Image (tube, rainbow, N blue to C red; front, side, top):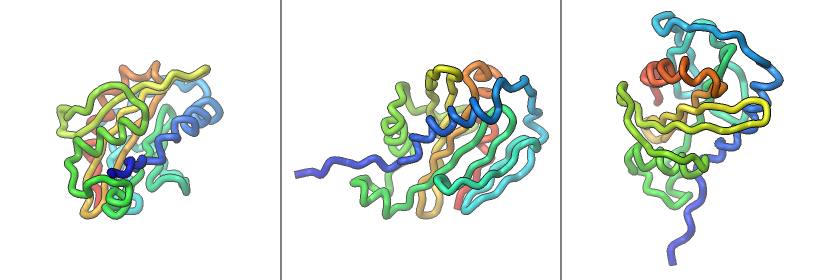
Length: 175
């Protein structure tokens, strides 16, 4: 008898944490236009990414990499091949399959797609009482890990950031 597959991405519950962050820390953010050409490198344990210079890397013991700017944030986590296999999945699965599993774990409606920069990704929205959130999620493959990278902003800023998130996601490099 086949064992039921366990969720491999426990960080999806970060939506609650992000909603709290956006309501308590940022309040109603002023609209800031970031120049996608003015980027700085931010590095963490096994990951580097180019983000606007105004970004700041933060410590968060619940995730592998956490970076924020005035209007949003990037949260990344990883699963090792051993974790993938222990959860009942093939550790050699394609990125599209990993993204579909992450999307299912997030209870996100939609489809996995490849954007204009070649990122395997999906998007979804989380309605909230005070702030509704827009997620652009991309997955990456390291040497022996799978990464899930969540770019998040308030839904009202979606039109601004849906052009930047794919560009910034294309700069992510993982080990």
